[in-house]
Length: 152
Ligand SMILES: [Cu+2]
Image 1: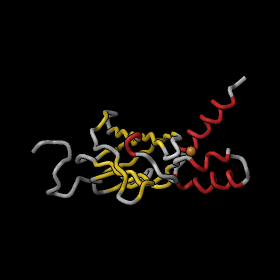
Image 2 (image 1 turned 120 degrees about the horizontal axis):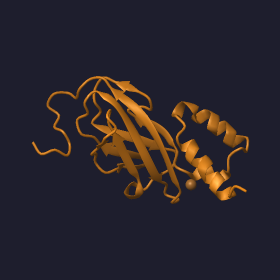
Image 3 (image 1 turned 30 degrees about the vertical axis):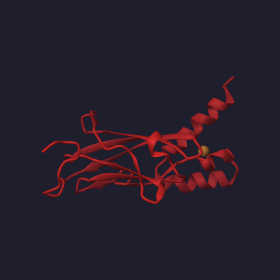
Image 4 (image 1 turned 90 degrees about the horizontal axis):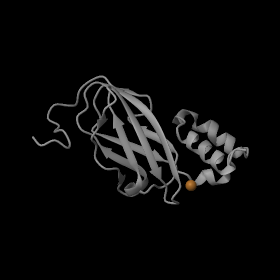
């Protein structure tokens, strides 16, 4: 027998990875009673800048992750991997001022390529969610912006 608690946990983690454009389907499923009520209190990703799957011409100076619930930045983890799979140093996740549903992560200057963001979030109700998405940079950062985390 499958442990029912484990099964529910896996299902919720899977939902956290669903791209925002499918969030409506999840909401509908929830409205129909197909999702545990507790899932409403979990922090699911509803928006990102750069957007999930986006191709951007200008390298972003930061990531902005928006969740359905407030999150605790201290317990959230965001990992960025570059075109060759190597981890790229970033700033620590911080809440946007006055908005505990938005996590901001400063980025170094990113070269053109495809990047993968893996996030682990802890909601204010202590529930954990995680997910992953990619974005692609085709151009370079504006001239004059200093790389974060590097000493000039
Ligand atoms: Cu929750």
